[in-house]
Figure (cartoon, rainbow, N blue to C red):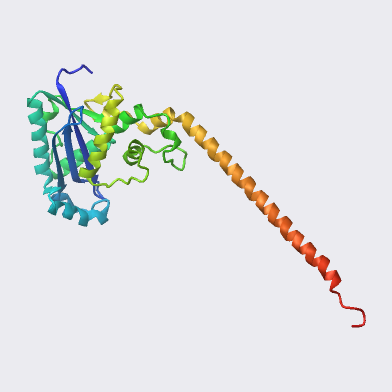
Length: 282
C-alpha cells in the first residue's frame, strides 16, 4: 500500500449487538490523532433496532435509558446515525485527513455495521463518496498481538485448551496493571479502553497492518500471541505441573502420616485392652 502524505486520523468505533439477529443497537466513535487528541466523538442508541429486538446483555437495558437521560447516548435511528457518521468522515476528508477506522476485532464491528445498515436502510454503512475517498481500516486486536510483550503469557487468562486469551478486556487488564478490570460492554465506555490500547500499539512504533478492505484483515490474531508467548506459556505450564506434583506428593504424605497415626492409635488400644481383661472367675 502506497504511503499517504495526508495527516492520519484514527476513527475508533465500537458496537454492541442484539441477542437474536445480531444487529447493532449501540454505536460509538472517536476521531483521534497519533498523540491521542480527540477531534470528535459521539455515541448512539439505535431505537429502531431496540423497538424489535433485545440487547445481548438484556439486563443492561435500564442502564442504557439512564445514560440517555444523562445525555451520554443519543437515541436515533440507524439512518440518522449513518448519515451523521458519514458526514463527519467526509468533513475530515475534505480537510485532507486520511481516515483509518479502528476497532478491537475490527472485522466483527465493520461487518455488523454493514449488516445493520443494509437491514434498516437498504445500503452499506459507508456511502460511496466516503468509501471511494481512501478510507482505511485497522484491527486493534491484530495490531496489539503483533507487538505482544512476551511475558504476557505468564499471567494472561487461559482457555480450557491451554491458549492464552487476548480479548480487549484481558489485554486492558495487562496494560493497565488492573487484573480485576471488567469490560462494561457499553460502546461509549468500551471505546475508552480501545483508545488506550491503540496508544500502546502506536507507542511501540511497529508497522501497522492497515488495509482498505476488511477481507484483508489477518485471520486468528490470537495465534500470533500464542506463538510470541510460547516460552512463557511453556514455563507456566511446567511450573503448574511441578506445583501439582508437589501438592499431590504432600497429599500422599499427609494421607500416609494420617494412616500411621490411626494405626498407632489402634495398636495402643489393642495393647491396652490386654490389661483390661476380666480375671478368670470374676
